[in-house]
Image (cartoon, rainbow, N blue to C red; front, top):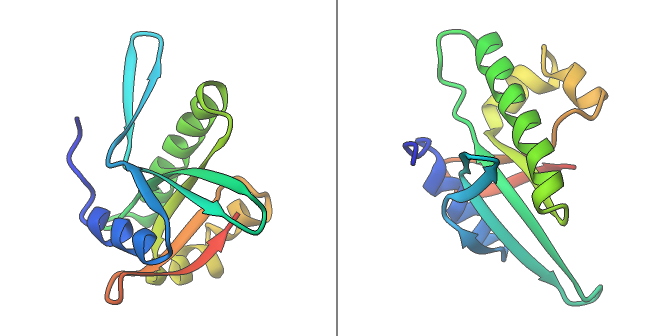
Amino acid sequence: MPAKDIYHDCVKNALLKDDWIITHDSFTLKWGKREMYIDLGAEKLFAAEKVDQKIAVEVKSFIGPSPVKDIRDALGQFIWYNDILARTEPERVLYLAIRQAIFYNLFENDIGQILLENQRIRLIIFDPKTQCIIKWIP
């Protein structure tokens, strides 16, 4: 099992504060003989709609020396996990969790903007200080 991202517990706490139930603290994704690990699995019951929503969350810190490499690696991992998840658990939606500062620096006015415009990625933006979710981008 791979090491946890430095913001793993922060995102977990933010999801709990947002009334999500953590169902997997390392969600095992299997395809053929391979096993991969998404950081978190969670679900939430929306009582008014009587719908149980399930998500998987991959946490990324974006602390490498190259933001372009970080975003490229995160996108590749997101696409790979998303495609496998769509075949193995189609009711579960994959999100990439990133810090608020990374969202503003890379996704709002920079290279990540094209990913959002083309709806290639779903994001959870969180504040590591308050351990709260700031924004969801489905």
